[in-house]
Length: 462
Ligand code: FRU
Image 1: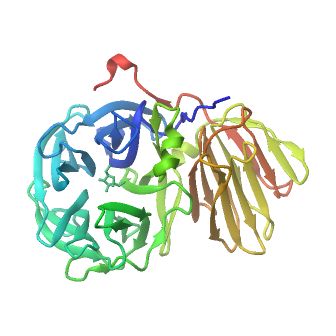
Image 2 (image 1 turned 180 degrees about the vertical axis):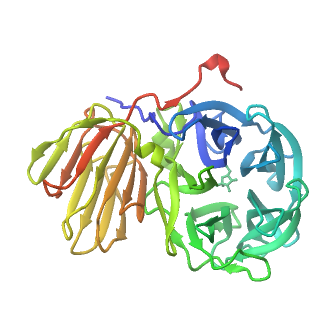
Image 3 (image 1 turned 180 degrees about the horizontal axis):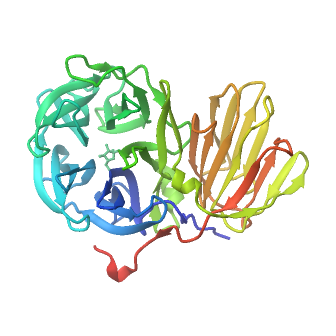
């Protein structure tokens, strides 16, 4: 029996392919999550911006497309970017990608909206400065603490190595290059940077990427973050190859972006997949769509360490508790749906712990003696398993947030996070826990249905 992968509460498009989150913002009373969307095929051939909105970070509605690749300067893709409200207007910054006869041209473009529903393109606002190849993209625009606005961009230098470039503007419309604020000697490209202040310290997120420059192909990439001593500037470029932490220790997490919400929290979404090739094709084979965003997470820091936890609004959602039956040294839960959270606090020290979802589609094991966390998922292209491991000296709490075909695991209140898509095969959802003491406060809660809605077809834009 085929079990659909359609998520019930994560942001995903009704059809086609989703990748990076773009233009996250709170604007005129609603949260906006734009994202890269190929609405024509489940591949990376054509990119538009799709979007979803929410009044509360919990109930999301898909809104169709916002920016289509319909201009000479963005004909082969409205690539990733960001949003900023300036003087009541919603400014969307993105990379217009043109690729003709193998030749790429990237231009940073601006589109504006007064109502968050109708978008008007104003065209390119920055061309690639000298010293860079046309792998120059993903503008993140932020207020500059010195006044005016700063744009950080992912870039590749003429020597074939990665950089984060700065551009500056007084009005958010007219931009001039400001030099490299970070340089890599190890990676051939940096994608999707983000720059912001977190509890008084500047933080830079970025995605180092190995590329085969001759074949113009990505080899591998991942996403990192680091807390900086001072707001970066081109006089003193950072060494991008050191001093970072991986933001997620799991399988599926890339291109995260953040935004500040009115109460001051910094909220992060990532692209919850990093599937490629045969794995990606097989995952989407019997589905109208592929990939989703992660759940919204609050990004915060403990000293120099970046942590992520599910947003308060999600944690406070009312839900139906499901009791577990005692088995061996743990409990077996049989929730009616795959959309649930499982939380356990005040974990007894030095105990091994195991969680197994749906008969082994996904599993977690903490080995207290070895101080390691192991997360596994059953592969869907062959009979093997994928494994991720990380060190963790002590396990004190965990939160596991599940949807139809994903699991996001937060350990020690956000110290370590593992994100995964997996292939549903078990007709009866289940969670088997082994190792918690009977007195540990643990709870499985079914999430409400209908948190995420596609709007009826007749209302959708093209
Ligand atoms: C990252 C990325 C970005 C680019 C976008 C295109 O996943 O390659 O650098 O703007 O995807 O969809």
